[in-house]
Amino acid sequence: MADGTKGAWNFGSDNVAPISPEIMAAIAAANSGNVGSYGADALTAQVTAKLRDIFETDLVAFPVATGTAANALALSVLVPPYGAVLCAEDAHISTDECGAPEFFTGGAKLVCLPTPDGRIAAAQIAEPLAHAAALGVHFMQPAAISITQSTEWGAVYSRDELSALGAAAAAHRLPLHMDGARFANALVHLGCSPAEMTWKAGVKVLSFGATKNGAMAAEAVVFFDPALARGFEQRRKRGAHLWSKMRYMSAQLVAYLEQDLWLRNARAANGLATRLAEGLSAIPGVSLLHPVQANELFVIMPEGMVAALLAEGFGFYRWSSRVEGDNTVIRLVTSYASDPHAAEALIAAAARLGNQPPG
Image (cartoon, rainbow, N blue to C red; front, side, top):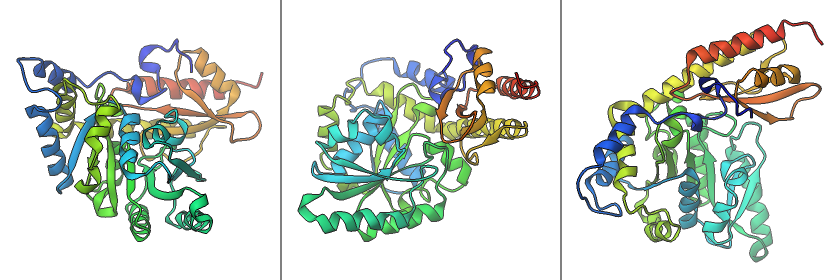
């Protein structure tokens, strides 16, 4: 990625965005007086209360600072060291967490399933389960399924797809974990309730992300079956993710959930991603690898255009070599703070470059 980007021209990740002003204000407001430490404060209690209200059910929730911690610690209470986690081959837990799930579970194996866009189909579960059963004690037995909503390719599981996976997981007595780093982006795309996208579809544990959508450093591990949370508090402490000054993390989550900030931010990010997709796909020689459903888009364009855009200061990643010839797949990610003028500038630059004669 070009790191000489012109500030607002950086579409490398939603992590490049600043903290939402409402969340920054909440952190400052929390910075007053002496309160209980390690989560024994009113703000941390509010996090659980707000999540219970939003998800319309009883639950227990534990703030942590990073998505990697949320995923790895969640899986650590679901999967024994000799167990396995079924996940997509491009899942963040497999490709971007430096072995944290294996480390925190004490050695569990990730069994990665091939997918075109990061979405596991319910029908894919049977084969690895049968293989493990046939090998018995000689093979690590699947103990959980982990899915990502939205996926690393920007795809969103439909409610029917989630329900089918939930039913398959329940039939095999496997808890279903959802990596929701971009949970809000998926939710506003589906237009359903948080309950319908999670526990009503069979999800047992959720890594509820906020950092990519306006927070500074705040996620929550949500257990819809409180019995599954046994030992989580100790694992969080042992894993060095129990903040002593928890109020500052909880203040972020409270502000994130108040007055629908999390949904407003996600709608803004998704809307700009859709605009980029429309504008770029209208340029001759440019196309989309997948339909745009959340705030990520993967664009196929000539390598010469890619290099020129980077040279002009636009920030993004070359993402894949799945296509043939001189084309390249790039990833563009929008956030609540992405500048619409920067998106239009990118579209205009790509159109100008696409209209230049070869060479």
